[in-house]
Figure 1 (cartoon, rainbow, N blue to C red):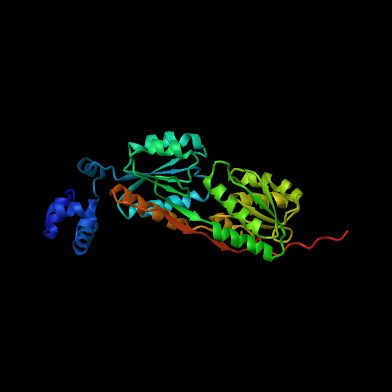
Figure 2 (cartoon, rainbow, N blue to C red):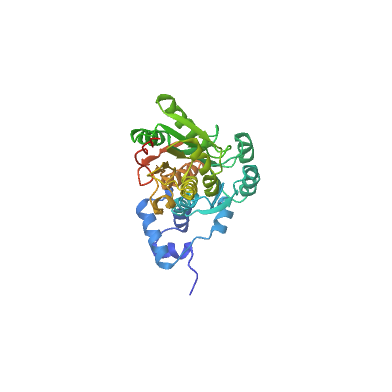
Length: 330
């Protein structure tokens, strides 16, 4: 069978080869009805554009880079999927790199990616703003879940949802709360802690801060003993993975949610929904984060002026929160 090319598609449809080429490389320049006919014919004939050839013609690779801090954290696989789906809809591939929770490695990894991609999505980076801006240079880039002056980004603002979570605990009689802070070099951890502190300052609730801890199951599990010793009955963990570790560690000590304590996580990853009881948490619109990041990057690559975007998390109440336990009488 003869190889299908843009020229054979053009002959079948009675259009120019350049029109077929633009339908794949610059679809915004082709009328929607013509583009749909071209795509349908290409699908019928089994045509796939040659990314290498396109790169020679346009100077673009057809790839974007995606740098994540820790692919083992359950927050990031759904984000990776969302970015890949949004990029795939634009016929763009994704080159994924994991920084293995090492903020010092991020500038080196960005430098390695820069020569291979048309743009870069950097998710929840831990390196300093100065280091990231220096290594990104003129490469089109978008940051997810962190603000860096001079670089566009999309963040999930959990302030309102965390305040709602604290209100939820207070309304259930919890007057002493514990905040398990996230990694010291995490921008999101700082923002979440700040939101809870400000809420506590406005209410007659005692707040105990513990940490910082890494966003790991074992770190949450190890915090269980100090949580029991703190006397807090309401616990706000940095993320769901840490919260699940807390629940496991508390159970080993004979303390169970929601009877003895109430525990709230953040992000609403799959683990939060499948554990028993299901975790009360802040639900982040992860799919929207990924989609918006790719949309912004597309605009930056095209040389357009862009504004950073914000999405908001919401409180999702499930089974790990309930009324504060009654104090035992001596």
